[in-house]
Length: 304
Ligand SMILES: *[C@@H]1O[C@H](CO)[C@@H](O)[C@H](O)[C@H]1NC(C)=O
Ligand SMILES: *[C@@H]1O[C@H](CO)[C@@H](O)[C@H](O)[C@H]1NC(C)=O
Image 1 (tube, rainbow, N blue to C red):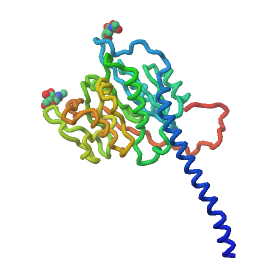
Image 2: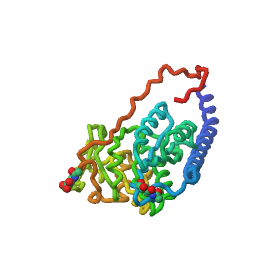
Image 3: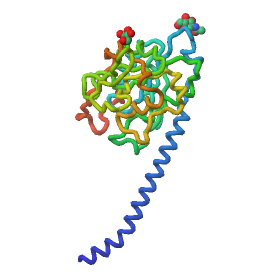
């Protein structure tokens, strides 16, 4: 009995190994495909609308605020985007760059943007599967796709400020007027973040001298994604500054990015020398879909 088991085992073993090797080769190939797709989709992400001279070339008008919002499909996506659009519609000279984590533009987001009443650019790039793990920084590819679009479609003649506006935050309208005057890189406090009521840059005599934060104060720029804005010309004159995947840790993305374009002593403190909170991390509560039927039961299709 035992010897029968062993002989079967040794007959099967090589086949099992061959199958394992084939699966491995296949996933490696598909990750190469993912990467190729990533770069190709970036090339294909030019806006569909041919634009006339972008707002922001007019020297007498204020600089345009470019808000970069990475987004991905989930139950609360449309609700979050609606909340954001309702804020952004009240901001003059504004351009929304929405970047989907998807293999193509989804119908939901396309329809939403077409009706949102905002100047916008709709991009998409799929996060390669190997980066979709907990402990990996998120939205890196999407933010970089937005930076790529800005560098391709804006020139030294354009005046603007780039801000990374995640779709789960709450923004005061005052924040946009604070950031609009950014000469190089501006910073300000962020509420409800890092396990604290707020985090903020510490300012002395109008200069940033340190960070009030509950987490890794040793980061060169201990700041949240929602806590800074960058002048458009700084983005253009540092063409290689991107959010990094290689060696990046979650929570270090902001610091790694800012290191490439500025120094702490050059930061411009906004919001009354960083004493006022004008943006909050307000994640929506995880929705309960416990009663959602497995198979579609309603007689009509409802987009949520
Ligand atoms: C430039 O902006 C100013 C103020 O917003 C406006 O009055 C003017 O008509 C604009 N000029 C052009 C050429 O668009
Ligand atoms: C910020 O601090 C500087 C230097 O102390 C001061 O001159 C300036 O008026 C302050 N700004 C605001 C808005 O409080």
